[in-house]
Length: 358
Image 1 (cartoon, rainbow, N blue to C red):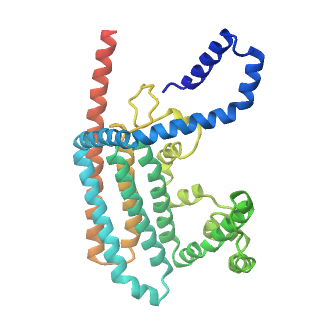
Image 2 (image 1 turned 120 degrees about the vertical axis):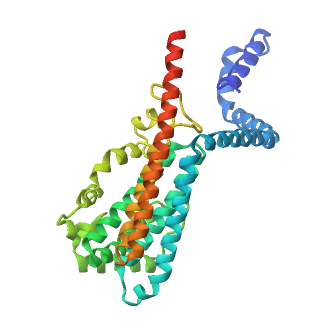
Image 3 (image 1 turned 180 degrees about the horizontal axis):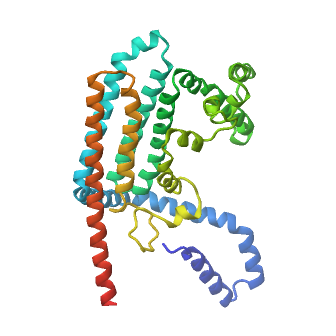
């Protein structure tokens, strides 16, 4: 239905009643204004029932269109998507085997670095699977936004390896600081959200856990990235400080571009990876375009999160697995870039033909 269909229908009926002399115009306007809430409730109920009757057919049609799109989309990007999926399976099994083989030994010696790196690698692979789902469904911008997290995981993993066990311990212990901040925010909005407050005993326990850590590591530990404060010799470090210390700040332009898809800034609503250059459409669904950047970025980030984990064990197996994954990354980049270039060339030829026709 049109955005003003109900409004026009109501205005037409009101004009008819006024023309027929059945109601006074001023009185009708007053009564209408008074009864707008009741009328809108009635209209909403009618539309809700109407949509309810059409739900099955509407969803069946939408799913058919999406399935058809995804089949064609997969054929276009098949080589790259298959290589990325294979790579994710390798990364998953590698992390699973590494954790299963060394976990008990690491736990005995309270190896904080091992614990942090295995968790970071597992989450990185998890994010990679989410990115793959979005890419296969044609949502390049969403995939790029999700990759942003994988980059942060890679940066943290690299930083922890550079600074060792003590910083890894601080990183894991910093959860108590984040829990305290989350609890304060929750307490502030319980009334507005109609939720129960955290019991005072639990609140005191959470606060005590946080206070003990600040007494141990200093005031700066209570800041957002306080776990890295001592290593960076900075009271209030931010993520960019950590990124720069790892030498991974050259990825910042891609990270910033991905951030546009996370935040509600004007760049994010006007720039879309899923649109061809110069295209002015309002993209609200899937697209065949733009997969190259998020695909190659997620592959690189998973490698950079896995490599520090493999580096904990100095043997030939770790070296071989790192080289295997690096080879997959090269092939993933090559496949996606090649397909993207082919699609860009096709789009340019169409645009050129259109310009000649015009």
